[in-house]
Amino acid sequence: MTAIMTGLFAALLAISVPVGYALIIAAGAAILWQGGTPTVLAVVKLFQPTQSFPLLEIPFFILSGSLMMSGTLGQKLVQFAAALVGRFHGGMGQVTVVGSTIFGGVSGSAVAEASALGSMLIPWQKKEGYPAGFAAAVTASSSTIAGLIPPSIPLILFSTVANSSIASLFSAAVLPGLMLAGGMMIVCYLSGRIRNFPRLTDAGQLKSFGRSMLSALPALAMPFFIILLLRAGIATPTEVSVIAVFYALLVSLLLYRDLTWERIYAALVGTVITTGVVMLVIAASSLVGHVLITERVPTIVANWALETLGSAILIILMMNLIMLVVGMFLDLPAAILLLGPTFVAIGHAIGMDPIQLGVMICINLSIGLFTPPIGTTLFIGAVIARVPIGAVVKELWPFYIVAAAVLVLMSYVPALTIY
Image 1 (cartoon, rainbow, N blue to C red):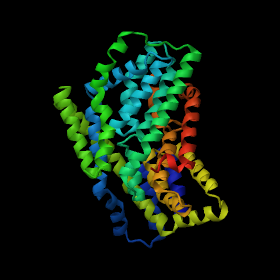
Image 2 (cartoon, helix red, strand yellow):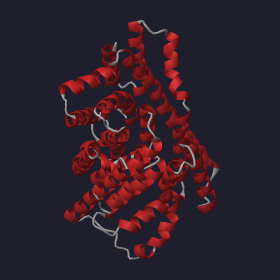
Image 3 (spheres, rainbow, N blue to C red):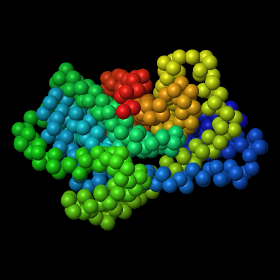
Image 4 (cartoon, rainbow, N blue to C red):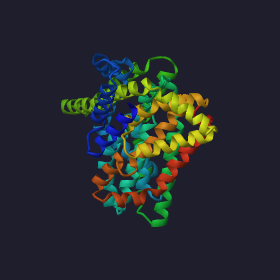
C-alpha cells in the first residue's frame, strides 16, 4: 500500500499536480487498493486534523504579519536596517538580511517575506550597482530566517506533528535564526569588500538611526512580545496569535495611521488563500499518515535505522541527507507533515529531544526553499531580479555553506536549542 502511494505521488508530482491534491489522490488510491479502511473513515481522517483548535494560530499569525508588512511599517524597517548596516561593505545585502530577520518576527512565512521584501530591496540594490544575481541570492536565502524567528509557521506545524510545546520551539529557534543572520551578513560583508560593491555613505543615516529605530520598534518587539506571553504562561499560542492581530491593527491605526479598508481586505484575502493551501496539505498529510501508520512504516524505519546504522551520529546524518533531498522537491509545510511522524519516531529511538529535532528539521527544509530545482524563494528572487535561475544559484554557494554550518551545529549540539 505504501509503495503504491509513493509511486503514484511521484508520478503526479512529475506531471505538475499540486502537492495537496497529489497527496490526497495517492493516499486515496492506496486505501482503495488495500480495501481494509471504510470510505467514510478515510473522509473523516481527511478532515479531522483541520478541526484542531491550535491550528487557529496559523491564519491569525499570517493575518497579523500581512497587516504589519503591507503598510508604512515595511518602509520603516528598511530605513532602520539601512541606518544600522548600510554604511558597511556589502551594506545593501546586509540590509536585506537584517530586514529579513525583522520581517521574520512579523510574518512567520519565508515565501511572504521573499515577495514583500524582495520587491522593495532587489530593485534598489540593482539601481545602486549590485549584481542582480547577488541581490536575488541574498533575498532568497535570508528570507528563510522567517522559518525560525517567532512566529514561525513551520515550527507551529511541527508542534502539531510532534505534540511539542510551541513556546519551547519558538524560544529554541531564536538562536539559530540569529546565527543564520550573522553568517549571511558576514558573507555580504566579505562579498562587498572583495568585489567592491557600493556602500551607503550618507552621514545622515547615522544621525537618523535613533529615530528610525523608534519607528521600527513595534516590529522589533514582536517576537519578544510573543515569547514573553508564551513563556510566562500569560496566554496560549492561539490566544497570542489573536492578540498579535489586534496589536497589528492598533499599530497601523494609532501609530502609523495608514490602516485602510483596502489593506484590511487585501490582508484577509491573502490570509484565506495561504491558510487554505496549508490546510489542504495538512488534511492530505493526515490521510498519508493513516496509510503509513497502518503499515507501521515509522516504527519499521526507526528499527531499521537503529539496527543498520547503530550510531546516533550516523542516524542524524541520514535524516539530514533525506531532508535535504526531499526539500529540493517539496514545499516546506508538506515536507514537515510527511517526514515529521517518521523522524519523531527515529528521534525518540535515539534519545533526541523533540525540540532539537524540530529546529533541525525547520533549518534543513528551509534550505530547500532556495535550492534548485524547485526552491520557492529561489524562483521568487529570480523573477523579481529578472535573471536566470543559474545566475542566482552561482551567487548562493557561500550562503549554502553558512546554512549547512548552522544545520550541523543544531543537529549535534543540543545545548544550542535546549535551554
